Image (cartoon, rainbow, N blue to C red):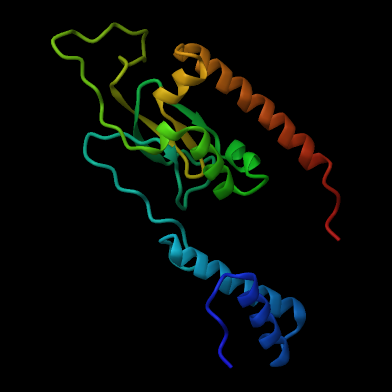
Length: 198
């Protein structure tokens, strides 16, 4: 009997039973059944089986915010992307920690907390006025700047950063930096307390 191409608990259980009845060891049967479920899930989210998420295409002149998903490593910083001036990047290890080791879940949770960040934005150019002067290396609010990021990270839009700081972008950045340090410390403590696998 062919295996079921589903991701439900019932489909997985049925496939495990079918594989075991055909002579496969239990551990191998479970691994195969779970792989089928992951492949079905991957296809439903636009990924190749066992592959990475298709990269979202952005309109020319637009900017990137929200979850960054793809095949690069979480510390590679190989992606050169445009972001709005004033955006904030949550590192990949923090995204994973928020999702209890699951980056996809971490991205989902951050997307709920930062709704403005999951939209692609176009830069806002001030009309009839010269852009405000900024410190060396800075960019006027509303401008797009290029940065290097990694898949697995999450870009928080300037709107969400200001919202965190109650209208104060600098306060928003400071609070986010404090959050990153605290989340990283908690993740390290949690990993240190994990015992040896049985």
